[in-house]
Image 1 (cartoon, each protein chain N blue to C red):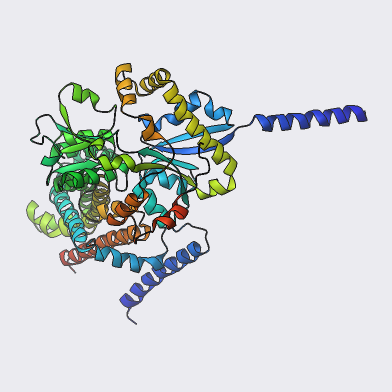
Image 2 (image 1 turned 120 degrees about the vertical axis):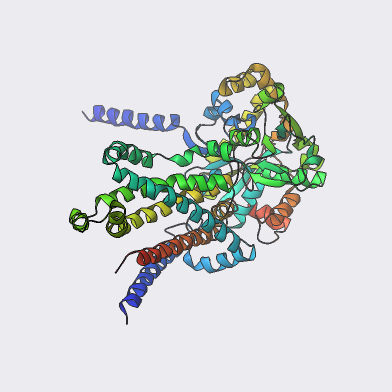
Length: 320
Length: 249
């Protein structure tokens, strides 16, 4: 009887331990701008089994970007906020938000472009003086790049927060604003139909090539309380990007299926996002970003770069 | 102490009590100051808004839009409600539909209105008007339906014409309920106008709330919301004065 009881207790204990070993650590990620090439690395990684290999189960919440993504982490509804404009992140952290930058998300602005209706008198960015030019939300990467384009071409357009890509498109096509922002693959259809013309690209400003415009952010509570999970997640994120660029055909097929676009458009999109641009490390151009954050009132007072390094960053994982 | 002064002080004491409780809760760490700003930060936040020019002009812009929307709702809604009372069969037929339309979130049609009216005050005022006119219509009809029949009978016994009956008996008796409709209309107009300003980053105080939100200036965001409350208070006070002037004593 004693032997049977001991065996029973041992079997129950083994099941419990085994069950725990099989259980994955859940990570809640808030991701802005559903369906962009650079915001699909996590779903691609989940599909390829990369996160499962790290023992991570990812729960994605898609947001419209900007403050909405960061607020999800601030209110502890998410552990990480992916694809946030760096100006907004600097502003939030400087005001006490319990966040840390864990990696770059986009360096340079190879993805962004601005367009006008085909019959617009605007031929290039130089014609945008006093005209309305859209960006998504204050503090976003589109805000940063729109300002950089204005400075580079020495024009003063009237910058207007137009929200997401579909809202911006409606406003341009109905004549409410002159130039709207977009990223591939969106609006490629209108370009090929001759209904819109591209007047500016992020790559028109060479200095942006060495400036990180979007970053990934984690909650301080997540980084301190579940540090190993955070490390494994970021490893999974890095490995997902490596997998995508090592398997472009599969990645393009996934993108096309997710967004219901043709493989040709998906391939064109892939070609707009060089691997170096989406490398998670390093975060570049901090000095420039701090200066712009101060100029555009995201920072209340100047923050020395040395202080910023300590306050803003926690690279829980960095690929060697 | 006069009764009016006592009432005012009681109101202020209630607000102060809530502010103190909120401050204590935030300082105790039960609520994050990144979500709700402590009331002690509002003065500094207001000074910041003032320094950036985010007080007077946005305040006046929002007041102007709310006034235009509510005035338009009154000009359209009161005659419409009166007409539904004068034609009882139409009143019974259309009241349920108008009531149902009241529940519809018409602000979600804002992209359509942006296309029709453009990105300007016409859109924000129209959205405000649309939200305000329905309660004005419904409350106006209800106001005239609520006029005691005995008063109308007395008027007819004195051989008053229909126009005189309305002007001298029905309308004065209906004024309180009509003004209830105007107050409701004003509130809905203001809420929708502020919502539009927030959504399209245009106009007055709603745009300031949006900007402060995206800049993580949480105390300034709440300071802007308090300015919106001030707009509402001013309008309601003005309506109360107008009602007093119109009601015979």
